[in-house]
Length: 115
Image (cartoon, rainbow, N blue to C red):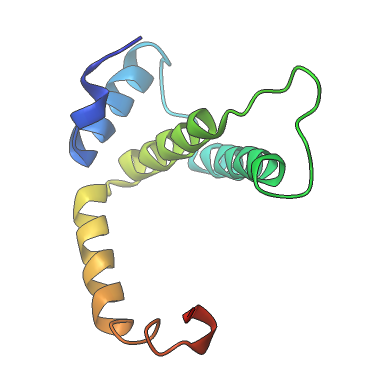
């Protein structure tokens, strides 16, 4: 199903997740359940990454679903943020500022990252 999803903002995505959960999904799962789901989805990302970039190969009939698995992680992160009253757009902006101030020279000075 193609939607306007390609160009939505973080706030719009959070609102879409909230609308879906409170209508189609009935209600939010508990925060602890959502944390367990986040761990599960992160594991699914790891499984696909191990097969795509690591030494493992995909099993017969198993698909490279990295995009879908990453979207699942985004979904549950947004659900947790919604039920915790967190605006992820604001949180991301503050996090980027923190990283920019803290790490502005750190990676440039890391000999492990030079060619």
